[in-house]
Each structure stands twice: as structure tokens, then as C-alpha cells.
Image 1 (spheres, rainbow, N blue to C red):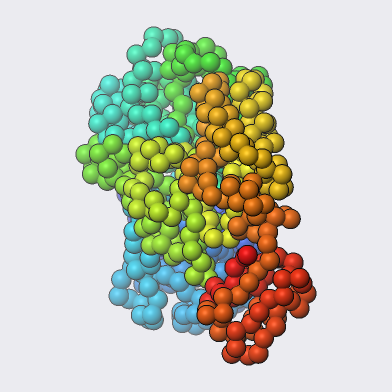
Image 2 (image 1 turned 135 degrees about the vertical axis):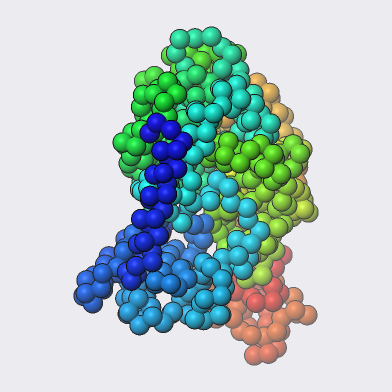
Length: 624
């Protein structure tokens, strides 16, 4: 590829080709084949569609796409007939797939009860099917990084080019100097999306200014947070967007070689990255003299072995060099001495995913989204006790309440929200009373949490916050590399205390000891893994101290999670409607009462299993 004109000509040719295919009489069927879809059975769905098409002798374009975000609706299938809207079907089993082919593809009648959304306006046979803009899950989102995910085939560079792909790369290399590229990124206000939010443009500038005959650019795709799948979904759904961002960054800092460090547990992401890199080389977007600019660039994939600590940039570089993944003290920072001692720029997947938009549309367009100190959007993996789980991208500054209740649809079965764990195992737990907190770097830090890479785990009233703190600390303690004493020994001592509290053996002074240990570990650990490991414990003590006190003083777990610590259940006689549901699920026959009359629980027979409380539709059952 030698010029912008050639790229635009190629885009036009591909666009005409794709348009001709869509305007032909050939039906198009698209199956969501991200990891979430495959785990839900998308391979079986795809095979059932293929078999039914062959049986009917139908010549259809059967293709794939990545995750569009509605993970709880997987497997997802889109059907587009010539001249009609693209209809999305959710939770498509093999049986559903056969029916969709027979009724929609062959019979040209939408299977309304399985349809969840439609692209386009006004041409649907069944007006009961909402458009994507009508869905609460989507109408509050602002998709910049995820713009193509779920819409294009991630294994087709042609579809990426047709959507405007590599135009930003051409613009940067042909008409902008490296300094102008860096200035645009700085003016956009883009901050690193992998953790602490360091200004991206400043990081690029520091690396650019460090003299060296060799520099590197690295994409940190070592996503290891429990409940997080943002980076994986972007790599699986739109790998060329990340590659394009890396090429622009490499040009800006003066690097001719790059690495994508991705954990081996992401085989689908790795495969699609490999395909994308080979395609980019074939089209001349990776290689020598890109766009006739004289700039050369090569890109490699490095598979990580799954160590959480390798998400820390110096440990990551040690792993690429073939050493044990362990952090080192900073300074010197990677921008001065990084991979093999050379200046190196490291950003995470989502950060690179923003770059092409900024270069193509300008810093002001990007800064118009979000807040003054936190520009743009943020991608979150919304999981836990929420009705609509999935992958979401929202403007910075949106409140937690808008995400959980607006996009996520609130709590299942009308339960009450207790907390939101944000920022992964190094983040903190935000209580219900702070749900109107805007999501930006400073607000979350002041609340005792952090943006992190974007995990968002919702917890309801059935969650024990002491047990949650123990779960996350157990994860970070087991992932500690052991190099520094505060992290290696301190987190172990904290975990021992939490184990003791959760088993009913907590002592007076344990809470204060946890706070003291956590504070020391945060201040003295070598890297950010240890420096933030106590956050879940410290934030739960801050907002849910009464749960710790109940465990220690009363030997009670208020959520009935910690074994051997809970009292019997009782029924509120004023709330009970006598439906009998609790009576039917009680394993010991401890509940008695006439229909439509208040029931009672025999505390001597009650096992405190909580089955009755879970089943009660009016929340009339609670522990003593």
C-alpha cells in the first residue's frame, strides 16, 4: 500500500463488492463466534444452520462475527434477507437454528418470539421487534472502541477496510509528523485504560525523546482479572483496530518492532491476531516503507503463561526476554530502559483501540465525549448479580447507577444491590449509597477503588463482603511473584486473618490489624500488584465494617455464606402471604403454616441453608 488514494480506492472496491453481495438474492446469516458465544453452544448452532441450508439446497452466505456485548443472550444469530433489515436472534439452540432457517430464511417470516433486535428503521415485518437503539442495553452506550465488534467478520481485513480501517494509519504516516501524532493524542486527553490512567500522549512523548537506535512498542493483553473479558473480546472481535493503533504508536515513538503479549488461555484471540497480522502484511500495512513513508514495522505475538503478575509492565518485559516474570524497581521507567534495555512504550489493548478514532476524527471529537479529566469512553465487563450481563462501552462520567440499572437492568428477582466491585482484584468495593458516583479516574480513587482494566462485578444482599474480600485477596496472594516481602508475607498474613474471621474464630483487634497491614503493604510493595492487593479488604472494612464486627463479635455471617456462623431463619408475620413456596423447599420440614396464613420456622429444625429466604417472593424471611 503506497498512498492514501490507493487505500481509498481499495476501500471503494471492497465496499462495492460487499454491497453487491448484500444486494444479491443470497441470504446472509451471521453467527456470534466470540468465546462467550462458543461457550454457550455457538458451534452447534452454526453446524445446525449449515446442515439445514445444505438439506434445503439454499445458497446462503454463512459467516461469523465477534461479541456484540449481549453475552447473556448467546448464542446470537443474525439473519439478513435481500432488501430487509438484519434481525438478531438470541439464545439460539440447534432446534431454534433449524426453525429460523425454515421460517425466516426460506419462509421469509421473522421468528418473532426469538428475535431480540433489528438493525435499521421501518422496514421490519414485525414492528414488535425493537431496533438496537431501542434496547436499554445499548441506548446509553457510546461505542468507539467496540464500534465494529459484533458487526464485522474479525477474520476479514476487507470488512475492516470497508468500515474505514487503516485510514487513520495512512493519515498519520503520510500527512503527520511523529510529533504531530503525539500532540494529537495528548490533546485528546486519552489516558491508559489498563489501570492507573497515566496520560497516553505523555508516555509516547517520553519514549520518543529518549535517544536510541532501537525502540519497541508493546500491547499488554495479559488480562487476568476475575470476571474481566474486555481485552479478549476486542481482540476476538476487531483485531485490526488494535494493530492499527500499535502501528500509529510505533511511528510516533520511532519503534520498528512491536509485540502483543497475550496469555495462552486466549487461544481464539491469538488465532485471530495471527490471521490479522498475516493479512496486514499481505496488504502492506505491516512491513517495509509503509505508505511510502520510509517507516518500517514488524509485529510479533508473545504468548504468556498466565501469571497475573505479568500484567505489570516490567514483569511482562522480563517474560518476553525469556526470564521469569518478576517486576523490577522503577525508575528507570520503560520509556527510558525497557525491553532488552531499550526505550519501550507499553499500552493495553483498549488504549490502542482508541488511537485510530482520535487520529481519524481529531482530538476535539474525542474530548467531546467523557469528562474534563477523563476523556472518551470506558469498556466494562458487567458481571455478577445483574439481569443483563455483558460487554458495555460508556462515556466517562456516567454513574454506576445508570450502568447497573439502566444498561444492566438491575438485580434479578428484585433483590437489593449491596456493592459493586470495580477494578479487578486490585480494585475496591463501592456500596449502594455511592451508586451515583461518576465513573472517572479521580472519583473512583477517592472512593477507595480504581478504574483498573474494566471489570465490574455486581453483588446483591446474598453476598458476604468479608468473604468477597477473602476471595480477591486469596487470588492476589496466590499470584504474588514472591520477590518483595510486603506482598509475599503481608498478603499471606492478611489472608490468614480473613480465614480465621470467616471460620468463626475472629478476635478483637483483627479489623485494626487488617487495616494496619493493608496500609503497610500498599506503601512498601515493589509493584502495583502488591501495592493494590489490600484494596478489596480496606474498602470493605471502610463501607461494611458492621459485617466484620458481626463475624467477630456475634459469630454470625449476615449473608449466611460463611459456614457454621449463621443463626436460624425467622418469618416476618406481617410480610408473609402464606404462599407456601418456602415450605416446599425446606429440606428438614422446619416450616409450617396454612395456605394464605403466615408461616413459622422451627429454629430447632432449621439448618440455616437459606433456601427459604432465596425462594420467598416478598422477602419476609431473615436470619436471627
